Amino acid sequence: MPTPNPLVVRTVVFTFPKASIKIPQVSGSSHPGADLLMNETIMAHVRQLVHEQGSLEDPKAEMIGYFELKTNEKDVFSLSLINYAYTGGAHGMTLQVSLTFRSSTGHTYELEQLFKPGSDYVEVISKIVAAGIKARGIETLEPFKAISPEQSFYVADRSLVIYFQLYELAAYVYGFIYFPIPVYELQAIIAEDGPLAPMLEG
Image 1: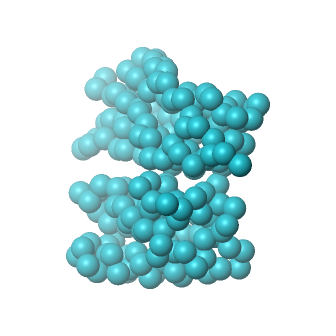
Image 2: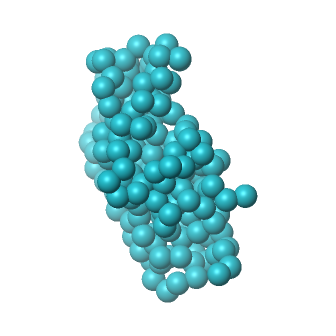
């Protein structure tokens, strides 16, 4: 079975008072309805990010939204939606949500679905993250125990990238904290029908 072509991605700019949001709109999937499903999912998360930022009533308030493509090959489409807003106070706040799709169906993957049923992916990834925290000298707000079963992630450069939101693991000054894990390190537990499996191929 031939590998589907990469999706076509164009940028749509949505504006409202004090805000400008760049939104990805995809097309070119091999199955009817997949494009629609992905675009609807993306829009729902864009709206959620706007909602979470709260009011823009402050005279100096502003909001900027954009996206970053991470993977668009081998029937896998992974991206991050990022929203910065200043709503008053000492500094603004940046939120990020990442989505990983099967391009041909529009199916969205949760972290658990990347791995074989019953595999202790939380423990495996947590050990890698703990080693990364120690190696990088990251001062955590609380002693790190484990990732969440629903930890934020995206797929990029043949790696699973686990990350933490602002204040989730460490102080604001650290920003988003990313832990790229080469798929080869997870090979034993990767689901054969998930989005990481194609990244193991040449």
